[in-house]
Image 1 (cartoon, rainbow, N blue to C red):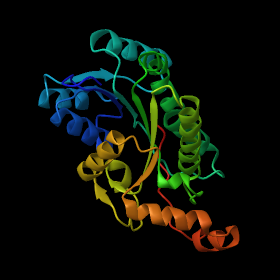
Image 2 (tube, rainbow, N blue to C red):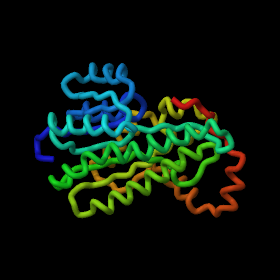
Image 3 (cartoon, helix red, strand yellow):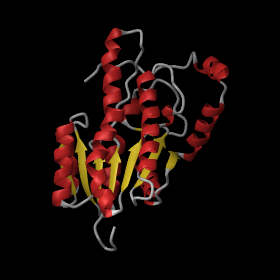
Length: 259
């Protein structure tokens, strides 16, 4: 980004939770934010807070055409973004034994993984052409090991981590950076239904500020908060027999209806 040029940031899932906190953070820092999410009424409320800086698009990241159109609008009206944050995601309790949960598995994978790919795709060539830009994927510590009752979510976040790593290597040397952020617990509507303790949980606004600093430093891979990074290390090194024994009786996220 050129000096004194206003930063352009695209954020998906920007109508609530972490996405909303990120949109507010960047707007407060003076950026122009293209806020994408499904719920138009919540996006309108966000735009009313920052009428000169927030540009909204009500869309579903599963809708390839809608994402392509919104991305082209950003490029034509604002220019190639400096930062694109693929934050849209869902967390649904799932159990493979229930046939009705197959739709939940499909939804989680489509939004959390393919939605990230669809969000980045329109911006890769423009960013590569300019030799700059940062693509940010919001993954999760849940992607480090498979959590009981969260097969879809853990699988989707593990896939997101590996996808982001592949993309980072593909774009190495192009000037385009790829940042993987793995949050622990963030106080959002998504975690409000969790029936178990959530260590080191952060307010969304605090998490957004820490993430923005990591993005500015173009950290390749980071866990926020840092304490959950050590939890993640422990999870990774636990032998399978011990992990199985410890987590077999862990509480599950409630199963939820697919929307």
